[in-house]
Length: 460
Image 1: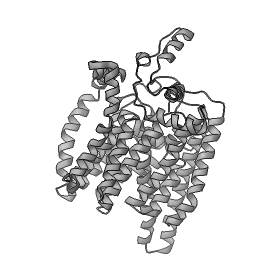
Image 2 (image 1 turned 60 degrees about the vertical axis):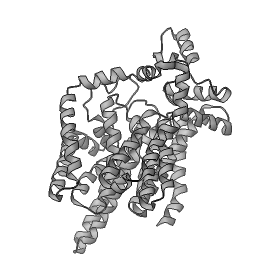
Image 3 (image 1 turned 90 degrees about the horizontal axis):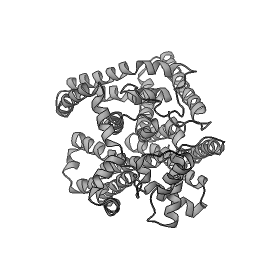
């Protein structure tokens, strides 16, 4: 089976390149970020110390008579510089142009497809890996982001690469994989601070399922590595902002408003109470009776299905395409479970991914593998749900773990046909499941053809 992937991988890569490049080359509006990052890379190309948007801020004020957000006027840009440096590298290879900047997003989107195969193969088998790679070629979030000059596919690549290297560490036992994992997590952090979320995801999984790893000093050093390699960036901030560095970082990322917004939401007290009860129960649960384990996970799965029932009905409608556009605040005031429902509306395959909660409840075989991916996606989604600024591009990093889960569930369901004794019933089951998968595939392509192919949206 591995040889099959090596044969079809160039085909999948070609599909990704052709579809994304064709969409990028169309006349389309560009988001503001798509001018910021190429500009930063151009400045770094000339002067590595010139990492700010002061000139952009002043020109915008002069030409349009209104101010950009205050962080654009600061002498150091608020996001760490790995993504602009990657664009700078692309400039050195392909020349200074918008297309060169776009190639970074495209390349990282392509690498996400390859990582989906590698993780699927390592956690499950080659068939699952191939299925995951096929699905990632049409996954809408990474599709849209890989044809924009946005950092999301780059952050997602480093986060998922860290996850893959952690898997290799668990499977092979070599501490070098864990150190490489820490390095990738550090690069994710130095693209955008939420890239560090892969570290708590790995830590939570290890504490619950791989406690022998927690006793390994190399494990802890590796998880601290992202902070060590970030020292030059924070030293740079200290040189620019002095003792007010943390206050500056806090304000530049709009943390006061985010915290206030989160605390003012009507779901905040209930969520805080639920979290304070759920976390100790879940940690205690994993060492207790299997029946209790099933009850809790079935309750979580049933609750999830209930809250996104409307989104499930939407995604089953062939002609339904979720709302997208250019208006800022397009998703202001949406319910806290926006991301969960939106993923399902973007692709019904995400609903199959969520079925892993029920798999973890009833099947001990491969439970750890399912839980590693569920915990990773859960930590990332939880952070952005609390953050409250709903834009689907922010959660690009959940596409690989959730689509690997989807592939694993599809393969599992098809293999269940072997348990059916009657030939007619077995064929009916296979054909029925095949029709569902083909419909989901077609619906996902349809959403992509409406939202991604024209390349005319920003908020989705």
